[in-house]
Image 1 (spheres, rainbow, N blue to C red):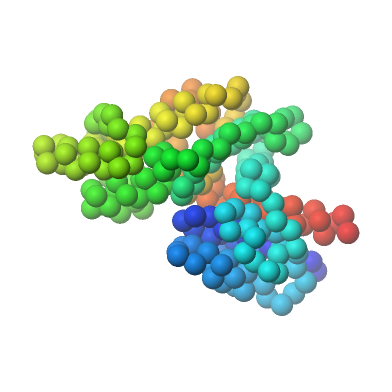
Image 2: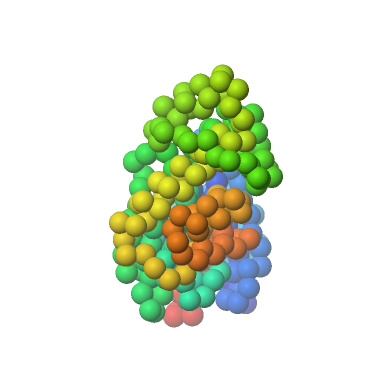
Amino acid sequence: MMYSIGIDSGSSTTKGILFDGKDIIKKSIIPTGPNPRKAINEIYKELNSNTEVYTVTTGYGRKLLEQADKKVTEITCHSKGADFLKEDISAVIDIGGQDSKVILLDEDRNVSDFLMNDKCAAGTGRFVEIIMRILQQDLEHIDEFVANVTPTKISSMCTVFAESEVISLLAQDVDARSIALGVLESICNRTVNFANRLPIQGKVFFSGGLAQYSCIKNLLQEKLGLKVYTHKLSQYCGAIGAALIGYNEIKNK
């Protein structure tokens, strides 16, 4: 039996999927760390069980795996992965470790337009990690941490200035939970302003590491004014898309 492997080599994490044409057989995620080549090879070795596989890579480090049969942009892979996880979507919003993407899909679920912001760290997963570290809180528990609080307005959206602003707010004894929610709100405002540069409508799929947190998904939905969907495998969206493309290559051959 033939399998495909999809690997998304991102700036923060490297994700991998083993796919049999119908189901996800195995998944893996590790920090990319300072050596993305090492990380992508580690994922490949874990997923390749010496069977016949077709491997597709995507993300920042997609050119770093010598065994890859095909290298595909993350825009294409995220659109394919999102469509696999949620049918009938019209757009994808991805907030990654160091960039954010907005992708529009046509009626055939192909990419019709997209925007990518990789010039500024503000509004990314890395930005949230930095702020939560200042607040001495674990990002994994952010839903519980910001529950039932009123957000504090964060005026700076440059990472450096926002850090200074958060430290200043803490010095004024402002509730850390309110600061955290204020940061998330500012990120969602920035993301929605970015997304609205395209004619976004219909059902929106939210992918990337931050998509696993309900508070961020709910804020995004509220400010976008559209139904936003996530999935427990949202963080694997790019890797899933890569694996789907790989399996289609197998069928075509």
